[in-house]
Length: 403
Image (cartoon, rainbow, N blue to C red; front, side):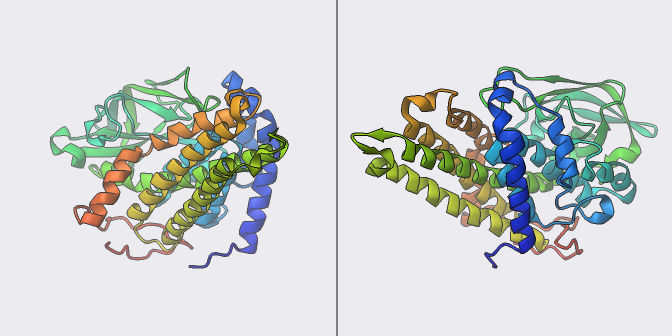
């Protein structure tokens, strides 16, 4: 593996970091306190060609590779988890899923405007009684002539009130259990669709998160993604991409925690010297650096497999699990280093800690990923070849290898 970034990737990081430093970080305290998601950020991301980072140019994207997407997610979360989450959902869960599973008509109608930043995409899988247990979902899609009638609800859906298109999962045949789940492209303007934001969140307060409701929503058969019964496979493939972006974002949160801690270590003095001179503070700084380096390697390893079009569920799960754990610990240590000031919104580290808790829960809890990794090692879990090829870099149709 080549551990050097290309000149284009170095320039990409500089561009995104400059954008975050100038337009996100100075406003985040206010946006977080107000629970405000500023739509101007979408416009600026579109202007920077970041709404379709690793979508091919023929579909309106910028044809970058998956590790370039990781760089974008790192730098966005270095500013705030809110905006990395938005990128994760729009690109990782929605657009890349359309690229992999959509037919040409669906790609032209939905993927192209999303990659150009003209429309926003989101993902509807989680329900009040169906999180880690996907097969427990209750939303149904009943065939009616040339349409499907959707009824049910989703919860904890990012971009619930701002997205234009949603990939929604529903049962078309409950008797088949998870083999009876199908995926649909749902438009916000379809009659019977509604959404409602969730207030009072611990973290990611400026993020738009909430519920989706489907009351006899009539979805044309042309909006069926893949085939009937493909929904579970589509959801798992989407999560491989979503988890990758979450892992990359966690690297950015470790960066932010480390940067703020180092800065404070040089500013604050106790017992006549900088607190960075105290060994137990140094231990926390060293652990942050170790977590940063290890998480980065896991993320870029998964990214390289994605670039090759190779099945990467195991590697992506490991990266997501460990990077999010390291980020949670780094944010906690950052608050500890800041002492009483870390408990105040005067410094951003208290926001880092609040934000760091969500990623160890969503897109597979750390407990789920722990079990996954143990089952891989024990031989209880073996990835099977998907019947749909992964888009490799540069989006060649390669045969997926069994693991």
